[in-house]
Length: 170
Image (tube, rainbow, N blue to C red; front, side, top):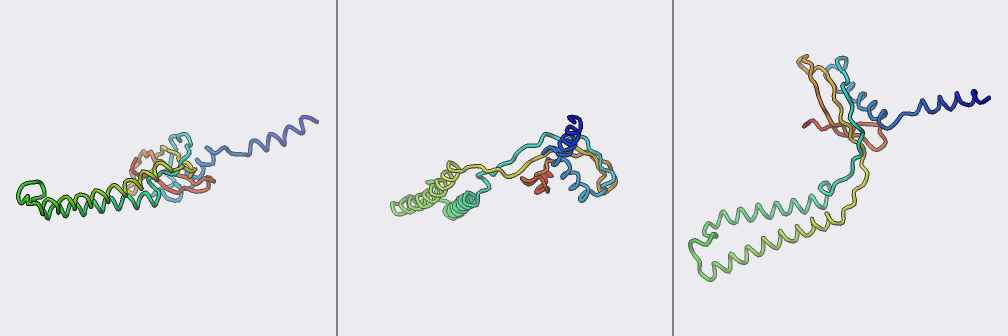
């Protein structure tokens, strides 16, 4: 009787895949649909499945604050180029110095305000689980028929059902 109960339990546990196995399968399916010559695909090795989390640099408010800072900096650089005597050589009359001081304060205050927003976002940011990353080394033929060895990070959704991004820079 014990042996009869053991067989279904063994079958049940042998059918479940680990997260690593699921991720590898999804990556292989992705490559099968995207490679130039899927039949030439040869797996070399899979790295360890790693969790990925959101980053404060991807927060829309942070991106906006940094873009405003960049815009203020570009505006300042243009103003400075239009005022070559800004470096202290040339017309240093009282009114000109006050004008320079006012403009420097204007640009500095703008930069500080956006910097404070960015720092606030950075300090209050709480990363959330985004999905997984899996590095895979494999061989496959390129468009010219040459066999290439590639090492590619693949990003997968949290359910391990699809590849969401591929980092081709590595």
